[in-house]
Length: 632
Image 1 (cartoon, helix red, strand yellow):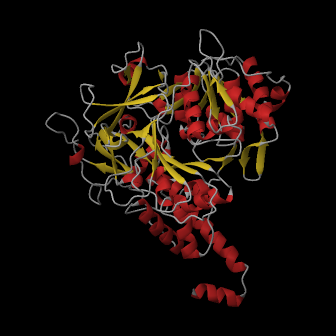
Image 2 (cartoon, one colour):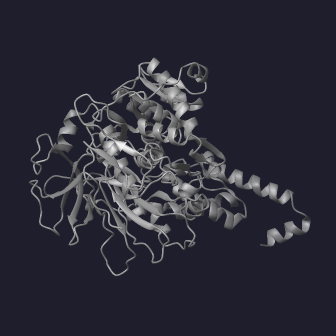
């Protein structure tokens, strides 16, 4: 199957060649245009008993999805929700999140996802920056989402008020230039920046996806991405507008390549987006021939592996920054082992143009590397409340004669290949992909430099591809010597865990090149002599602690892990959890769940849980079984 740009659908009736419903987008001054909420309601009217959302043993029909979201939309309107006013959602990946996002859209408002795992300080910063009037949350998460001037709706305590509202008869009429959602990304200025995406942007993604991948009401699509990751937008709306079933992966499956592949087969998933870090090992796995999966879509980081021959599904590599509504280019990958070039990122999607330009913004010759600029219908409005940064990144499209045309400067390098597809060739700045998250290292530097013991700092990513980790280089203030734990705890108060460096190196000054800029190549690798350690380090004191330290230090690539160290601040992340659980099972013969790792956070507390399970196991055995167990 070839993926190529589709004809422009804005301004005409667009019918997906394989979809169940017709997307009708009406052009003209002041006329109503269909939005996402209209399309989901149409799916609900067509088959109200069809399953819209499945999460383990829990399911929600399209009729229930429509009823709950339209009643909540009515309540939001009572509280002042409307066009251009973002409704923040501080909710976990769940049916609650989908209902609330749909309600915000039906009310004519935009939604702003907030990952509940972010530090409270970051959540408040985003809420204040976005000037959010309403926040939807639930239970214990509600306290994290309170900000100046915003009203927090706790779905538990507000349930009675919501139920008394009459259901909204139909979604509020909205035009395609109005906001659909805002997603905050890491910012080079030291603060996160909100990308404003319109209904027109989102509809282009939906129509391209449904047509290209033949989405129908019979499909079952996976939902793995965290709510703060724009891939969740891609997972949710193209499928719910088509009447398909959205299936939420459990926490264990979504962080393990092996468990995820088993889950996809078991759940009968037909279309799945899988982040690069998990997709690469999955492309080398053996899959049963009866696998229902039709398309495995991947993206988020540079892909370094081609599919193995004989996979029972089509692998599609995708590329696109948040500023271009998730996907800008897409291409099918064929099994290939003969080329040393990395897999390409395909061709532009519908109504999208790719320019590869030199330093003077002139097109480079085919095969030459230049900076990627993206133009077309998917280009977001800009950054919320940041007109200067918007003007720097969203530029007039000098290659398009139509007045008002714009292009987005990505900061990515690429080239046009002989067959017309695009090769990705890295970054022009310090932006990095860490465990699937886009990270501006300058934001970390700005936060680190606010520490009272830090005079200057630099942050770089070390390692290769999906195994990258962040290393911070610190020039301490005179006579002050910050500990690693104080630096980690300071950063963790304002940054998500994936932005906290796993290692800190002390240097006397930052090296510079002949232009007076930071010479990243001259920064030393972390070693025992330059690494900043903790004076209060406590060595493991029991056999269980010693073995857990060995497991974690090897997986984290850290020489020394203390018994009381928070291993999440040493670079541990959810994608390592399954590996830790596997090694613990091999060594101790017990099962650790993700909950145990996330609740323990230190070797000492994790060792206590291991010892507790071991004692339970021993107490349930006969004397002979105990003897055999100890001997093994």
